[in-house]
Length: 265
Image 1 (cartoon, rainbow, N blue to C red):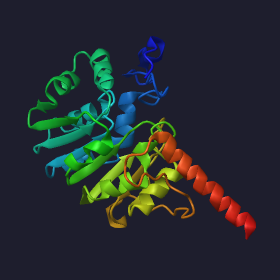
Image 2: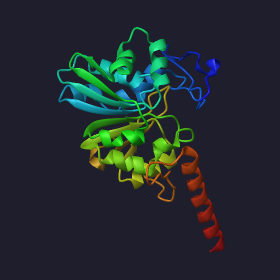
Image 3: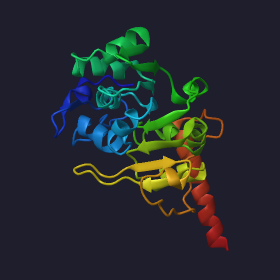
Image 4: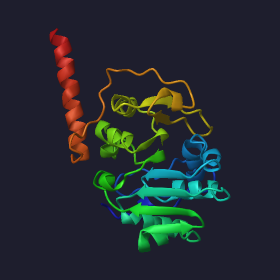
């Protein structure tokens, strides 16, 4: 992990909210359009969180706490709701929470999670799992009404986008629950679909691009299910222990083998 200070200087999004560039992956934690508006466009609005929390308690699995923007947006959206919201959030790097403290010093969310591993805001609560998502899975029992899947991109954080991980999420989501992610990748969608999820594309909320939503059955989706290319190979991590490079290399080897087989026939 590099500690190049220039790579972690604050970045002001077009909506005025702050983010940083990850010093190892080289990617910003959020889109250049803005961290807060991205959370709203990709997770809060399409999940109908405000409507749902006014009807019943909600449980969210937030994959990739990062700078805490999705967590904070969810808490703010539920602030006046009559029912409690609980969020289990997973983050493997303590430095992300340290960045959150620096960028948003008025917010006590990240400091509380760093100090106690939990946070309480009225009737609403957050619990932090400071570890690799794959290691945290046995502790993440659900059922979750919503899964906000927001790791770094599949090319940088490949272990966060595998068929086996999506299958593990399927076991932890409420029967009418939703998984939401910013990714439009065909490989990601293939992994979700082959793990047993039905998919639809989110409505675009300019300036942000549409993402992907997944549910256990088509009737739980807010839009018509996507037709998918069943020939696309997903990322795979059978025992949930491979490195990013190993996952990509194994997929590339399968693609080469498929191509050679097609040439021979």
